[in-house]
Length: 446
Image (cartoon, rainbow, N blue to C red; front, side, top):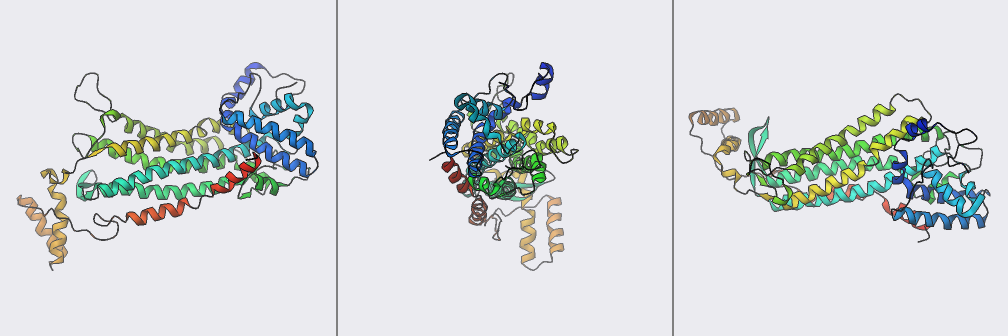
């Protein structure tokens, strides 16, 4: 039998096949469990419109559950000569059940098949990203509270500016992740819509029940217009990649700070020895390689939405093979961002914070604004107070008061940790993962 769903009597040139398939079979292994789940929902719908018998549905469901178990264990293989995951699943069914296995493709195309595979994959991996972000968020807030009284200089233009704190620093990145989660929540909403039944982008003459497959797969709703369902290929990936890039931007900035703060010229933190590497020539060196690689990986992820845009932005409506290339960069991005988040959490949990930074005389002028404000609070006009302190600095007789008195919301003395956590938990609660888990369990008979 042909190992390509579309193959008839003409054999494709081997060089052409290798060029067009590229890494697609490798990428399809990411999608294997979800391809099976999509097929399980599809055949239940086919039985409901009398394109399969009840006995055929039972046999096909049992076989697909076995294939799912193989894929879930990581043992699913796309055999040599088999074009993609869809062909492999159908081949396995046909070997086991004969012509019955060929019936599962009624009313769909590989176009909507890969669309639903991608949506199911993305939805599941977004849940993994949410879990990883939550872990890092907890670490950041815990460290913010732990070091809330450790004063460090804040900077503008990389010049010493005003007093900050390690509590503010950790908490700033925690709150940044809240906004990143809001972006990810929007991407999840775009993802959580069912494209199955759009076929090749123009629907089917079969009386498909798309609402049924939407419910069976735990989607919030469907992509209603079949042409738009196909137009969503590439667009969904770009939107999700933008959400991943937003998280990467937060962590990348943190990584830059950590490299800088760890250097001898700053000395605000000390990275654990087991997380640093040495020099082949300089015995004293302890290099922040983990954060340097984190910074570079975050920059790569921030390029991903642009890469997807450049692949897809000159395509009209309908399917084109260009879209295949999106998978090569997009599918592995989830593993990358999760590893970044988890490694960053490990690093931050094990750093040593220098609690005496603020007493370094290099930083005494960061207290100048504190003195200006003290004078202004005592009745001196602000501009006069500013000039008075400025002249004292010029004369070299400025002596700072090291007691910091910040009380407003979000300042050194009032980090608003509880409010930041409440915002995070509110956003996180809006991801309805339970619905799709319940739907999958029903399909799998659990």
